[in-house]
Image (cartoon, rainbow, N blue to C red; front, side, top):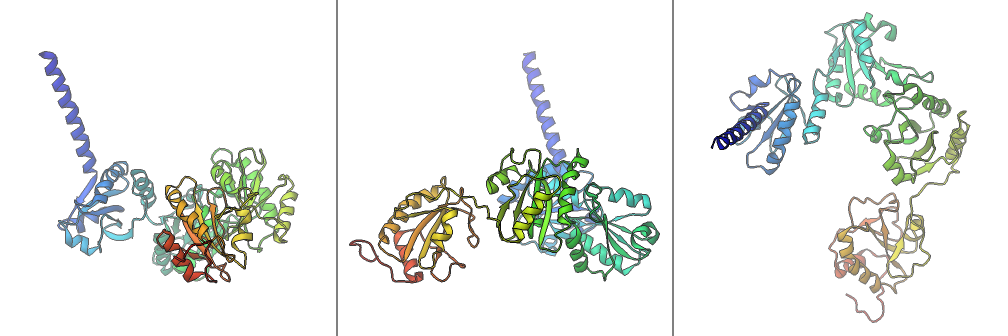
Length: 495
């Protein structure tokens, strides 16, 4: 009997502990409403508010993630929630029309919509960047030195005093761009005198780890300051001559034609070794400024999956030496086949061939089939131009994945369509494995199967097929879009 009582007491203690922990977790999310939102929200420098409805399925799914994030952010960023079914005035005040809606507030003012991840980890990391002021007030030279000695670039506004009209504009820009860049400001011209000659300006400090003899570590902006001109200044100078490309910034870099040298780069543990090869890239890059090509370096391990998939390169390629690729904004890809020499001569030869148009583009492609006599023609990347862009043929092409169940379901219908039109000399019914072949420009393939029609005279502007997927539907589409009247095989009647 005593043992039973002890067991029951132990169970009660565990349940009470769980209840206490759950209650504590819930308390980390501040509950606000019409009666207290305006005055409680103003007490918090940065606050993430979830506007929700109790019946909303997405809100229920988000709730535990939101609560976990609130606990991790406790003391840094306050998380709060408002039940819009019971507090319609507050939700209406902030234009809430759907659930859940997440907004970032600063001292009670609606600052920005939250458009980050909706997991506990995602909310935590996103909101950590939102904590603190938009721009840090740097009051001494020591403050400035500490602030710019950072892994990332720093943008510092230098102003004659706290009442400067340019400071107000700078702070607005910092508020809009704080998610991407670090901002600080000075209200004593003497603090940054060595950088700006004792006048109001904006200074862009490149990260100390990327210091190089080939470019200035500080860029000065003294033109008329607006949010647009500040944004433009940062965009044009933030990356420098040869930025460190990461998974986070790659999309911003790839809006231009980009050369990248991949090697065992590690700026956390080996700055000197990482800059050894970067400086050799920059020495060559300095000879090609203004030619429309941007240069970068990257850790090849970070991009290994992408390099294997897009360029057919593996861990052994290059060995300890960098290997180099060019990816243009149009999607064209080139590989430097020659070994990277320490004097940079091989890189110069590669660039000369690139600018002279002598390089052959790299295309990921399956082998061209030796036989291709079936009614559905097999296209690979290497044969795409010859078959699909044949100026005398209309081509209907299906982009598929071998593992896609919808593609497998479509296969007999698609084959019947090809059989039906097999005798037509003016049209080709084709398919391409999109996993093992590069998809050409002009074809947006986000899912499988995706079907396009490339008619005679309109190869640069193919038509996406978006109809039903029965034989009669395909034939109806082709009758309307084909450049010639369809010819049916054998004794088939027109459908």
